[in-house]
Image 1 (cartoon, helix red, strand yellow):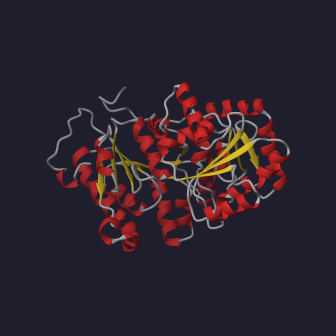
Image 2 (spheres, helix red, strand yellow):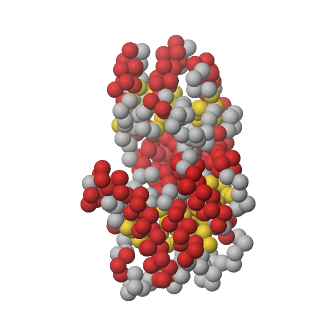
Image 3 (cartoon, helix red, strand yellow):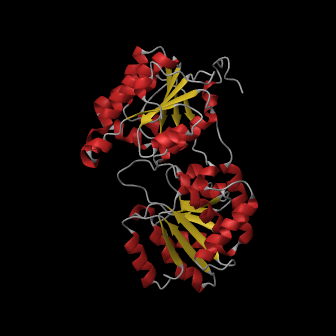
Length: 410
């Protein structure tokens, strides 16, 4: 991590000059979907980007290993405590991103800003009037929802979107919600998250995946011939993990040798364990607790199908992008998921998985029954899922109409 106070004196060694400033209060190594999304974006054009982000635990070591410069402002939780720091952090993010973006402009003379989310957008609006730059703003769904119900913020947000060079949505559901909320002429692009395999501690060697699969199954004494269902996520009621557990006795009754691995931790864990005991399937439900990203690849490799029957959050109009479904598809696993929100952007019914009504017991059981009993269907959906998960739209497509500066051509 480079100290922001040294901007006026420190000279970057690389000959290429970044022309895109990516700004976000969430960036790796902090675990967050938006942070991962923006990091993958930066990896596409490391010679063109410079990052400005909020500080987080472990950022100095992480930043030193990156191919692009990263500057951080202080996270107030470090020195004000969690409660007070969390209360003041949005204002600190707004002020720091504004003034440090100006300071970085004096050094790099970047031409574009990519604002990582809808939050703290007033800083971006002011920057667009002060600096001779153009900007793109990334939207992820919940950031729109939080703004549209405040008349003052809504008006300012619409002005910001109108002044943007383009709007980048993480899903078609987010794009649809944006269009329903605002009437805009600004070009809107959908660039979905991608899977970074090294995040999961795997390489492209199939033998490596086979070894990981065997190791995980041996850890939980699961026979190689058994069907393994996998879920990954926080153990909260909204994720409906109990629906999977409730289907295990039904599957056992029709002769399916089935096991369920649940990766994650949360307040709902005792309830789920009690349910498994009541249904007498506790020997077949394996709670792993928290699993680091670097070890998750083994669990995806070990399963035969992935399932998560999420319910729509009553406090939010749109569902967040389910990166776990994309990860499962990347590893060639068929998915059973709820037919709602941005899930339908990732899981295509009868192509790479099965979409169900999570409140319909019959619908859910039939999906499990089909996939557990039909290996050919699992392989077919898994192959298509792997193909779909490897497709990606590069962020450089946003700049196709612009000449690329000298020295930045690959």
